[in-house]
Amino acid sequence: MNSNNKEYKIGTYVNKKVRQKRLEKMCPVCKKCPNKSFCKHRKNVKLMRKCENCKECNDKEHCDVFYINIQHKITIPVAFDDENGKIIRKSFSGKSSNEAIYNSEKYKKDIESGIIKPKLKKTINSIVTIIEKFEEYKNRGRRYK
Image (cartoon, rainbow, N blue to C red):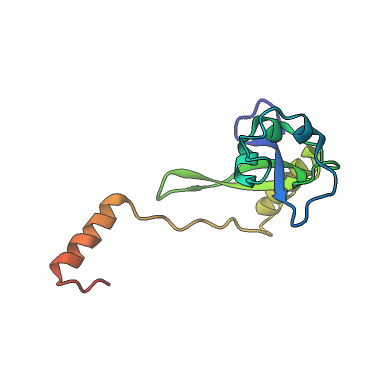
């Protein structure tokens, strides 16, 4: 894949899943945090996700609140929906960015050879069609079908 190509997006994302049981030792980042009152002394997990220090922490071995995974992801265009005029995209992930790229290239080759056919999403009703259906419902005496 060409790095100048704007059709695809590669990204590295940090996923944090809450632990059911916390570890015995407190996270070193949280120990040094001067603003523990923001997250109510580490009791509110939703606020911990918004904390600037906690957002930047990628220490998977010492974090006592979250399981931390680093995910590499690539999004590529697969097909073009004629009804909406939008590009349909598909995401691939892997342990490294090279693995994610390999999975996407393999998928592209399978589509070209005819092994896999891309699935098109059903179109969502526009606001105009929703209003028209509602008007028909009102006019028919509240028997909506």
